[in-house]
Length: 230
Image (cartoon, rainbow, N blue to C red; front, side):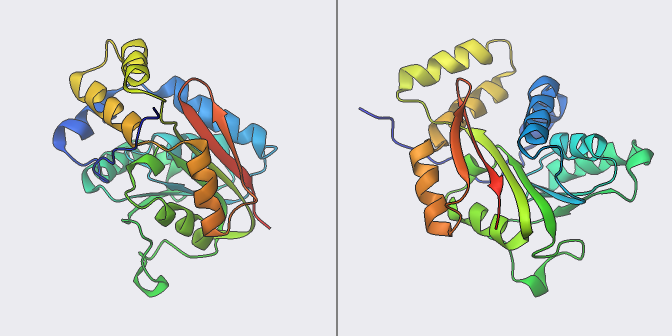
């Protein structure tokens, strides 16, 4: 019997979570994601990139350094996570003027209510890492993607893929998080239960009018959504 989805809290803003995620070393997986994006978009993400669900900015910083000609905007709904991102930015003066962060909780507000740095229809690449499984209504992510993207924008979303059983969840937790702090093991387990399957994501894209994007399994526990919009 397939494992049913169990949603988790949408925002990760607990002090213990922020401290644990800020201190954790995700360098290898974060860099692999950016290089995967570079491969799929033929190293041409354009000049304005937006990172949805940026957390403490791990991917946002890597995007800004990988494409030094681009402006990068990281968006997140968790103030404590964004505070860590801003502290890191203050220690990276070479990125001043090219990397910015803003607080937004999905669904995306009406254009008149968006923060000053955020514009609809303006981004040549819309990127997201591990945001989808947090959302109680996954359509708010795809609606934000469609609203923020400029014509012919490249979209790359990577997220966890829900395993088939509780036993499979526990095997992944044991295999990948055995030495991690308890808060990270707890959150990883909850996230696997909250993740979607490729078939579910394909249905979401069809409902959002984004059926031209590809959905594929990636590795042992991830899925990816990618493609260039019309």
